[in-house]
Image (cartoon, rainbow, N blue to C red; front, top):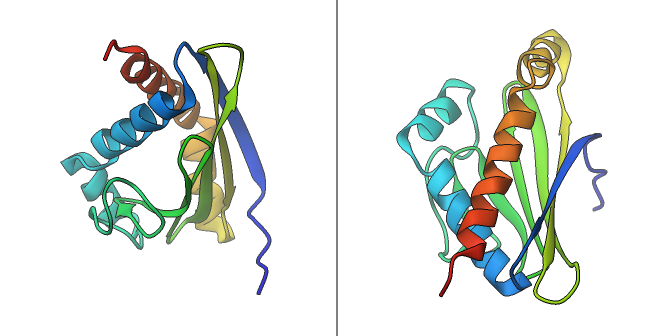
Length: 152
């Protein structure tokens, strides 16, 4: 059965001076670090997320989970798709790694989400209207860039 993805919300990108395999490792490490902390688990429980704690295979693979997200697609060096759902939204976060010249990789992060009902619309205004989501995505991509460009 095919299910249409939720509507496109935004996309953020950065170019990283590293090969795709190094960016993949940096991305996975930063996602684990960022979303496996206590505040992420508390937030996931508060909004009623389906996934509230780390679970599944490591390193990240299809079926892995951490607060707020479950890995839907894991294609090392190419794409990582995270899926989540809570009482205010259902969403996808799609990371794509693309060559950008010798020793360089473009990392794109696409956000897609649906916000059903009055509470969902209010949540969207709070998270996206405030600019909080954009700030968080820029910080995450910068952290991935730093982790990926580190020597050895």
